[in-house]
Length: 285
Image (cartoon, rainbow, N blue to C red; front, top):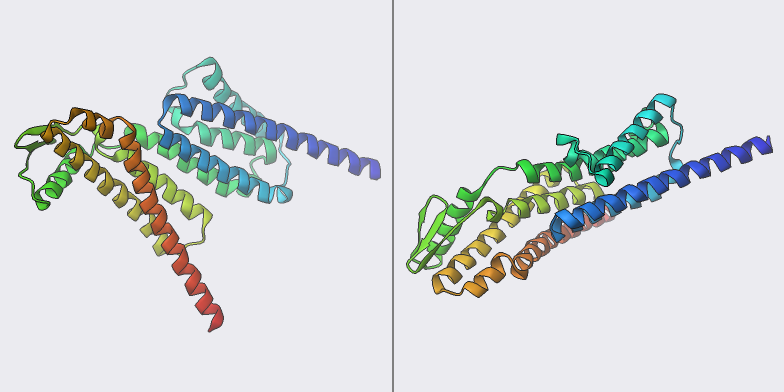
C-alpha cells in the first residue's frame, strides 16, 4: 500500500514537472515572438495576463485533478506541437496565429486533466481567450480614423483654434495632418480594454461594474489619443517637425499611452475603494 502511494506521488510529481516545463517553454517562446513583432505596450499586456494565469494556477494547483485519457492527451500534445512548429520552424497555419495563446493553454489543460477536467481551468482559459481576442482584434479592428478626425476637430474648435476638416484631414490655417488608421487610437483602446478585462477577472465586481469598466477604458483610450492628435496638428501648424515626430513616433506616443493607463488605473482604484467602503458599511450595519 505504501509503495503504491509512493509511486503515485512520484508519478504526479513527474507530471507536474513536465507540465511546468512545457508551460514555461511556451511562455518563453510566446513572449519572445511578441517582443520582436509587437509594441512594448502589447508586450506588457501579455506579461500581465500570463502573470495572472501563473499566479492563479499556483494558488489552485493542489486541488487540480491530474487525470487525462489517451484521446485528450493526444489532442493536447498535437495542439502544443502545432504551436511549437509555428514559432520555431515558422510553419504558417494561417488564421490560427492570433489564437496560439489559447491553443497552448488548451493543449496543456488537456494533457493535464483531459476533457472532464477543463472546468478546473475555466478562469485561466478565459484569460487566454481574452489575450487571443486582443491579437485578433488588433488585426481585424475597424478603422476609426474618421471618428478620431471629427473628435479632434471639435476639440481644437472648442479650444479656440480655426480648424476645418475634410474627411480624415484636419486643416489649420498654417498646416494640416491626415489621420491614418494606425494613429486613430484603436490600438490604445484595445490595450486598455485588455487591461479592463484582466481587472474584471481579478476582482469581484457586480454586473453593472463589469459593463462600466471596459466602457470607461475605451473612452479614456479614445479621448487621450484624440488629445495627442490635436497636439500633433498644432505642432504641424507651427512648423515644428521635430516635436511632431517625437509625439508621433518617438517616446511621446508612449507617454500618452502611459497617461491613458494611469487614468484608467486611477478609475479602477476609485472603484475598488468604493466597493471596499460599501462592504465595510454592510458589515457594520
